[in-house]
Length: 332
Image 1 (cartoon, one colour):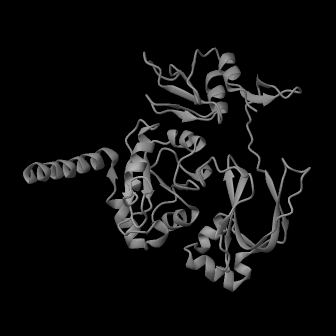
Image 2 (cartoon, rainbow, N blue to C red; image 1 turned 90 degrees about the vertical axis):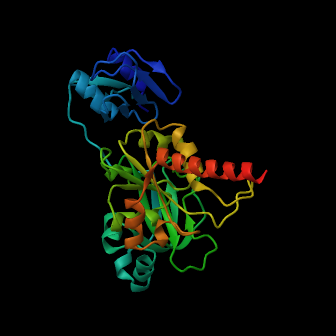
Image 3 (cartoon, one colour; image 1 turned 45 degrees about the vertical axis):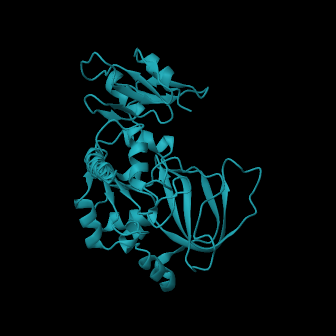
């Protein structure tokens, strides 16, 4: 594993430990207050002053002209080699027969029905299997016995490694529509390897919703494997210049604590404000119980074109609160 702090020491950079990241003065522009962060888990860096971003290896190369490499003791060191190659390494292998979804019209019809276009299916290498199981390279001594049946399989990459698979039931008979390998990593954003961090990024909850954004609006989109952001996903979002959260509308559900309809907008604002210092935008499905996967091309475009900044939403809600407060005063 990369020793980030040791690498920063080798670069003669003074830094402070801030939990999940190291904070220091930016080496690329003059500043008095530290705004340059290097994240411990990934090694990625971002300056919230000048906006420069990149990987740990990029930082090493820019400051020293050298690259990071392993030595014979599996320790990281700086060398004069400047070539840096990424390799695809699968953390999970699949035991079972995999087939192209294009070889079975029934399965292809299912994919089309849930919004997966031919372009999407090819780009993300979606396949299917009637019976299979996962073998983890980390659990070779304990071969799993559990089999999956009748699923389309979507490989989920992060840093060009397959860390997870999303498996969707194409028969619609299983009580669990979506399954993942036991213990698989989902602490990353699906499709993050393929985005431009300097362009507006649309963030959705699931791959099914992502497919509609990807097809109808922009390829610069990621999904989160669920409603709540994980620490690794937050680190990835911190590298992005402009974020658009496209939220599901869950107002058809009742919050167990408040006994009121679920307010995903307030939940999102609290979450984003806890770690993201830049302005961000929110797009919200207008129909109760609908997420982006339920919307057609025109509605998705309309919702995204009418998105609002978080500060504007807060101002709008404050106005509503003031109106209600005035009504309360008049009543009494």
